[in-house]
Structure formats: C-alpha cells, structure tokens
Picture 1 (cartoon, one colour):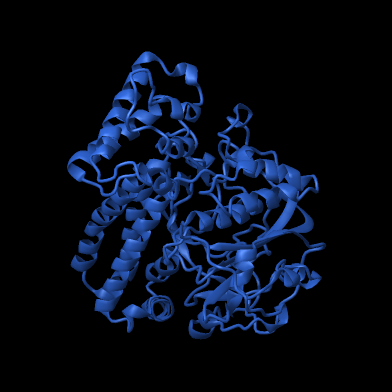
Picture 2 (cartoon, helix red, strand yellow):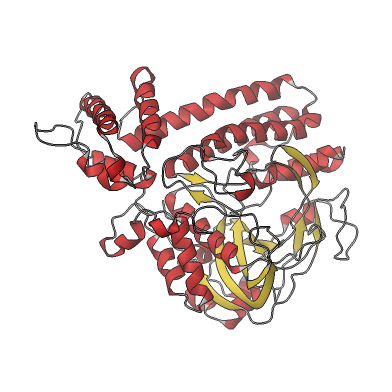
Length: 536
C-alpha cells in the first residue's frame, strides 16, 4: 500500500508550480486581508503570517518524495522557512478558498479557509499535481474573527494521522511537515471560559485538491450559477477527466462517481475503526479523501455510538456507526448544489438511491476480508456479521485487537481447547466475561469456524490474508497525546518513532509491541485521550 520513494530529485528552488485553480477560476476582487463575505469568487489571495522561530519537528519522507524532495532538502534551514510560511518560492500563488457548508445538519453560510493557506500546485516529475497547504499560517478573509493560527496538539495529531491513514491504505490528504512556530497561541481547549497559552505550530498538507462539497454549496446558495459551472468544469477537467466535457449527462456520471468514492471511503473508515468526528459538508472531499483531521478518534472499545467530539456528545450525529448514513446525507446536499446545472431532480435522486447499495456491497466485501472469508454470502454471512457486531459491545472489547487476534482462533479444537483463548487480550475487563457472555462468544466462534471450514482450503493463508486488512498498529489517541506531551518538553523522538511504527501498521514489529497495546486505564478519561473539542 506504500508507494515507492522517488529516485529523482529536485531542490526546493527547482520546484515547478502550475497553479490551475487560481489561473482558471475567479478570484476575490478585494486584496485586503479583512474578514468579509466574498462574492462571485472561488478564492482570495492572501499571504501567510510570518512566525518568529520555525523549528522542524518531523516530516514525512514519503510525502516529500511526492514533491521530488530528498532528506538533504528537508535538512536545509530554507525548508522550515518555506513550510512555516515565512518565505514564498517563485511560482507560488498563495490563497484561501471560499466555501460554505452544513454544520451538524444546519446551513452555516460562508465558511472558507479560516486558517489554511494554499501555497500553490507543485507538478512533480511524474506529472502529478500536488496542492501545498499550510494549516495555521495566519488569518484570511474567512477567519471570522479568529486568529488563523493552530496549536501543537491539533497540528501533531493531523500530521501523524494523515500519514498513518495513508499507510493503512485509507484515502487521505497527506502531511509533509510539522513545524513549531516559536510563538504561543491562546486557546480555550474545552470552551469553558479558561483559555491558556499553547505552543503554536504549522502543518503543511498535500492533496491533488482540497475541494470540498462546500465549495459547490456556497455558489449554489448564492445563485452564482456562472461561477458554479466554472468550478464544476475545472474540477472535472483536472481531477475527473473521464467525465469531460461537463455536459449535464457527464456531470451526472461524475456525481455518481463521487458517490462511489465517498461510499468506499466510509467503508475504509469502518474497516480500521476510524471516527472523523466532524462530518460537516465543508469537511467532505470531492475526491473521496479523508480531509480535516480535527477531533477524530480510533474506536478502541467497540461502541458504534461513540464520538470523539465533545461538541457532538449529546446528539452523536457523527458517531462511528452513523458515518455512512451521514455521508449519504452530505451527498444529497452536494446534489442540491449541482441541481441547477442538471435542471432535473429525478436522475440525481436515482443516483442518491443507489448509494446504500454501493455502500453495502463494499461493506460486505470488506467484512468478508476482515473475517478471512473468500466471498461474502449474504444468506449466511449477513447474520454472522450482525451477530458479531451486536456481541462486541456487550463487554468492553478492543476493536483492533479483536480482529487482529481473530486470525489466530483455531478452526478445529480438542475437547479441552478454548477457542476464546487467543481473544482474551482484546477485552478491557476480562473479569466481566461472565458465563453468559463467554457462552455467546463461544457459540459465535463455533459458527465462524464452521463457516470457514466450508471454504476450499479453509485454513491455508487465512492469518496472512486477515493480517493484510486488520492492522496491528493504529494511532490511538493516547499515543498521540504522549507525543504531544514530549514535543511540549522539547523532545521530538516519540513523534518520529510513532511515524516510523505507523509506516508498517500490518506488520508484527516485535520491537514495537508497546505501541500496539490497547488503551491504558489512565487514558480512559484524560483530555486528548478520550474525547476532544474542536479547539485547535
């Protein structure tokens, strides 16, 4: 799942920019960096705010290779100056995008890049376009009174998770670097009236595009159909050329493709136990990527109603088990936005009706892989999976450990052998495994073993196949918090060690067992380890 590192090389000064987004779409007529409503434009040109003392904490060698950069380029002082926003290279065209969005189900109007500034599109030697974006680089016209900066805790979490997701095989934006700004930023972490100064930081993110559903929504909401059509045409021409030119028929085919990409993304999140936390339409990538790592979390004890977001604690709109349905709702908002270009509701509605089938088909295939089944047979396997997912929450069960250890459950057992034994480490409170729960698990495991035995060569390669889709290492919240604590003390070693471990999430890595441990008891309720706010 990991792309081979580039052997070709370009220095920082040799990076080639081809800024199609700013060249082909209308810009904000005003050039002053003041908070305002931006009409009839897709972006505003804005400069990053310089920082006092940029210091590189960590970088991704794989993301650097996408830009044809090598370690010696990263080691130069110029790297930290450029990717903290202090220096712009020739060819860069820094800007912030204008978009709107539905937040927690309600139309929020104009939102936009309030603390993200795009530097420009690098074209690498493979001809790929990569938009460079600094998160935490200062205010923009879309900052809505905020300072446009970011703090270490949220920046480190985004940096590590972006690359962890990539190595897990989940579609995602990428992260090039994490740089301390040398400045302090005031944040009210819990929105409880107790703000405090925190270390500031800047992350450089990469993606073919950071376009969101909200980019299209804001133009439709304002009735700016001319700019909306331009944006759709540019999006299709550069990112979905198989659907060009952007005729109504081709726009419908493109929308169906976006639905497929989004359904597949939801399946990948569920496969690894990822919870985004803020699935507003402005946080939904038009490319089907995981975008905007805010108060995300990894499902540790299997609870489909769990959300990592304190803002969502009551309604649980964006909890683990609802993510696929929320994606469907968000796609309906995108359909509303492009409807004026189609002038018909029926074909859009038909595509939206196909989404549950697209998702279910992909989800069944994914679950078959997680269980080591060669093929998913709905007549028998649907009940098998549903019974398992209903059983897991009955005792606090670590999702990652359970599915990883499931590959070790024997298919044939002696009278005195316990199929449940390989799974005991997955339970947070094994003493709570009473006779009733134990019997339910034993019965399910017997059914599971019988189902596997029905397959040709039932046991051959099962563990190896299952271990390719059930990771051993994920970025648990407590691990990220430990790295945040260490960087705050001036020690960058743990964030870099985590980055290395997460490069190989499906491998055993015997020397790194400590990073595979399930959540320790001290992290159960600690801020940053259990739930997080949107404060960043």
